Image (cartoon, rainbow, N blue to C red; front, side, top):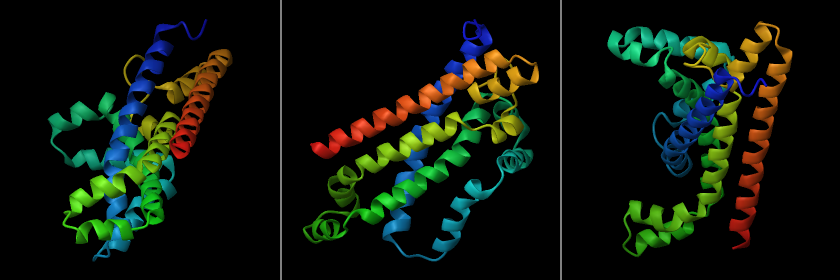
Length: 219
């Protein structure tokens, strides 16, 4: 009965949409940054590496508050388009999920032998061609893992969402904030039902990723 309510169905749809967009954006950002940190030595590398860990080590509420403070210094029309709107949901999820994706992609590129990439460069390939033809195919399983972790992490995000996006019914409510709202009004049954959706969704995504990864490995 709880899952049939319009506000819960809206939170399910928004969660699936925002988590998917966040996972895609996280991988798109994580691939070049992870490759850069893994393959190149440059000034400021350690600083960038430390900055990427900040969303992981900071308390979630501080991450949301930091975003809120940051958007106080942007033009008002842009702030009104993002803060406490659907884009703020995606941005709040992205801040933490992307850090996990970058760490995963850096570890993936560290494990890929760069000698074949160097051979491709000596045979006349440009850096972009060597990456697309040699490194990218070998990094696909890592990209799948990064996307899976980003999706699952986005699904469970709560603190930054509550501060930066709010928990407005039929607007910025996702599954994690639905649990909070249902508990706040004493509807434990609805909170348990929504929590079970999150558990099942996370398990399904992780199982699919494992099976896909094993299939790719066997091929």
